[in-house]
Length: 460
Image (tube, rainbow, N blue to C red; front, side, top):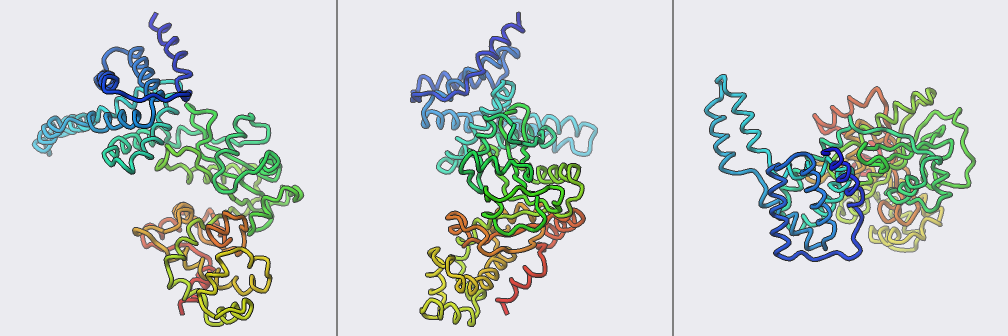
């Protein structure tokens, strides 16, 4: 009988994630009813069937509400279902008294249990539902959006992030290769989630999944049709330096038997609700292992990566322009533009994109813009961290800054973010651990001699 109830409850919850057509407001009476349901969840009244039914009802109620109603529920959970301060204080005092005695470990367990928030017990009940994990990931999207204006939600966000980090531990994730023969629904999600280089059409996607390409994603067993993160790879015989050439749909398919280089040109996190849950570094390591097994002739693993904050940084760092553009550079640019030899002239030129059609002006800008990008990668920091988020990711995973590529991305996005500059990060398996140690211990950024020379050239 109990199993039948569970089965009926599971069937009911299968569709509870569907979005309501007409979100409802939340009145005070309904809020009081929800408070009572949350108290039942926190206390754990009843067995497995009751817990799942309660979680289902709460999920359905939450999803049917408008934004203000959802905010009210999240605030209720955050502010009224934390640890009991008196219980924590008592358990802490008992622990302090027990230190160094045989009862220390039992006191520690009591303290840990006192610190365990009822919020966590409420969240965990959703984890048991067929679509409960998906619900919690989406719920955190709401949390992150509302947190900016309501800091008191931070406690709930921290606990949910901690729980999601445990539930999405890399040990639970499955690495899958995505091909043109994968389900259409999954391929549509690649188009939807691509965050680095927009997929413009099915033809574009097919090109990215051709025989000279690879695409891998991490999947969670409770979200089997949703890639959590995916990486796109091009197999080549050189260190690619132009993304438009790399993504050219009309280029001939490369013979993978001649490939000695794997270029990671796009890594996309797909779930905003998993912000702070890191598994991208494990993805790259697993993909490299898979590629080496499939194509043992591969010798070089590198990225072709954007510099997403280069222009923003440059616009608020005037001294970087002075170091990057030497007097000779300014004179050459002035002659070609018939303007004054000043940095204002340079900025005016770079404000548009007409200059990329003028070969002589392109040549005059290449060296100083490379120096500017090198300074950005090797010196720019914010709050003691590397300023560039992509650089932070790859250098933190043991790559080195190998080469800067001028006019490597001439799309509107590429020009707006980085004046068209891109960078190759090189993953040399024998140097990865050494690079990570140097960065963590001494802040040393692994970089090739050419990049270091470019960074120093303007500072003399």
